[in-house]
Image 1 (cartoon, rainbow, N blue to C red):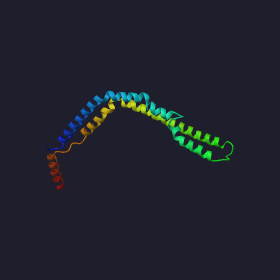
Image 2: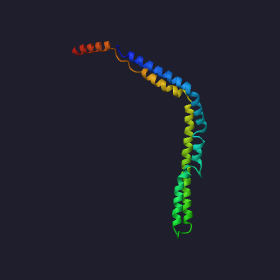
Image 3: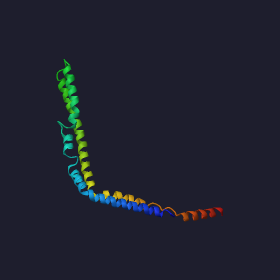
Image 4: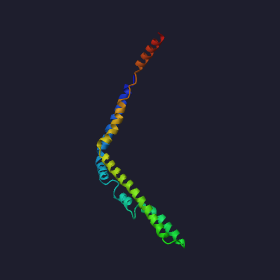
Length: 165
């Protein structure tokens, strides 16, 4: 075959086939995808996860502090002759640290929830899926054409003649 035009046509045909296949998959899966992303857009991370992240008494932060609370109680029970109010202050300090951690985590959790809602909205954009196939297709169409064999031979011969002058 002379030249790269045939390769480019073959690649373009392959990309068009890929675009059609992706379009068919998109049409087949879109109802379920829409339901998933609509739920994500409305609910963000969802109730089970957000409940765990936002429950001060029994959520993830409280569970993370439970071992420290148990360890503090165990250490205090072994100590005798502590100054008045020492145990109360130690517990209060631990409570304050847990509250600060909860507040810090809450801000991150709310931001993650908002980000999940935005991802849900982006997932509902049908152009996002289709653009993936189009990017590949346009990349092939913008490839420089390879010169034909005849053009290469003539170009080399003319270049040699010009160099000899």
